[in-house]
Amino acid sequence: MHLNKKSAIYRVFAYTMARFNRFAVYLNCQKLNIDNNPIESSIRGIALGRKNFLFCGSHQAAQRSAMLYSFIATCKLHQINLMDWLTDIIGRISNTTQNQLNQLLPHNWMKYQKIQEINPFREIIEIGA
Image 1 (cartoon, rainbow, N blue to C red):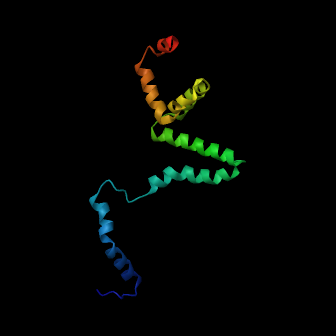
Image 2: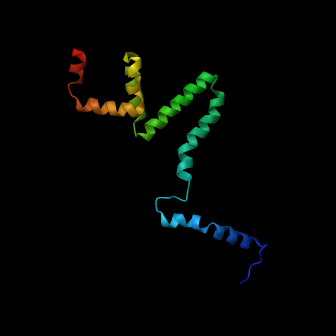
Image 3: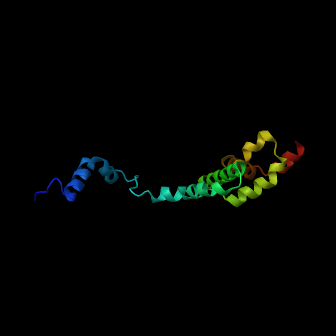
């Protein structure tokens, strides 16, 4: 079969064959996903938030909203229950010194929670300190 170089099917084959080595990577490496839907789903909230930030009322309110989105995404990333984290830090933030605020960030909070679980005498130690 002979294809005319101006035909659409010829252009499709020429395009594919010129890039065949790049396409074949998906066949050889099972870790690569040819579908990008998981990535698009993970950033959907950011895209929606970006549009919603236009209606926050002020620049400072938009920055606070963005910060909250960052906290939520960090909790998701570290598989932290958002309500557990928020409940804990809201109860503790007023008694936390400025140089200890870093402990309340989600990725550090999880480490701190593990320390609390390991040390059953934490309350006794804090009272004596």
